[in-house]
Image 1 (cartoon, rainbow, N blue to C red):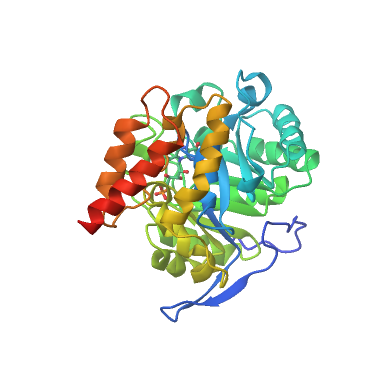
Image 2: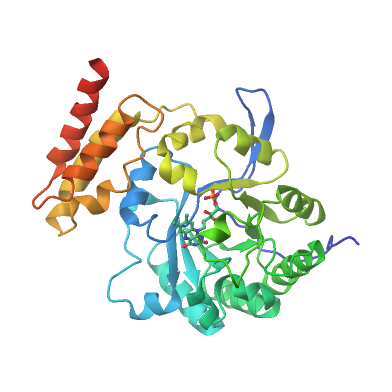
Length: 354
Ligand SMILES: Cc1cc2nc3c(=O)[nH]c(=O)nc-3n(C[C@H](O)[C@H](O)[C@H](O)COP(=O)(O)O)c2cc1C
């Protein structure tokens, strides 16, 4: 059965408006429209995003999931960000079309470049108001939500979803979901975490490991929906993995590896987007963080809340452990400031010389 749909009206706006072909160092040519760092709750906060931005100008960065209640009633302004973080997408969680439309209007007014709708989070909190991955069973509602968000905001509205949920994991189920949401909701860009979610019995952490990844299913989807922009996510650890996916798909999203080993991002602009302007190396990135840290501390942020995102900076390099240890030991002490970060850097420079 072919799910190829003809004569549909779709909004074809996206951050990068045309694909770029890149002949990589491995001589495999790929075409890229999107490269992003995944939304990750408690990880990709604004400090993390400012830090990650040091390594790539082109990667699209995402907020953590922000529920509509948090947008409207949150005690802290979770929508705050630094201008340097652009291009930046906000990820919204919710299930009421009017409320999502209202929050989309707010997100656009706050200057976000894209709004992403979460249809993939398997947590119990999502179960309670039938949002996140639970919404995969409600394709018409997802279409309604997306249509309302697209009417409310003129910036691109995208979806991050899974390849299935529980026993609803056939290829036909996935196609019907994508078909309905793209045709009735007008969504033209999907980020697909290539594993299904088990909604009962597994917690969110287990749901990022246990059901096996199925990349072929996402490749197949692109063949059946060639007019859609499809970005793949799940288990991607290197840029050569990314290039392999880009031979079949339009984009790649990396989550845990980008957070735990941010150095991987430093090759993205040159390797995937063919850019020639050099970006700072790890040491220079630390230096750029110092004035940011100073400014944030003067506003009441504590050092550990920033440096916790920087622990993986030297992963795989000499001094990595020393860097992590120094920051973990000193950044949470009362009054700790940027000098702790400078000292951590000096400590690894000394330890690698000795
Ligand atoms: C700590 C953590 C928090 C996450 N929070 C979110 C979230 O807020 N929204 C979301 O769509 N996915 C969330 N995810 C899932 C990731 O976006 C991504 O889909 C998943 O980690 C698979 O990609 P990876 O193998 O590249 O990490 C989270 C993942 C982690 C590790």
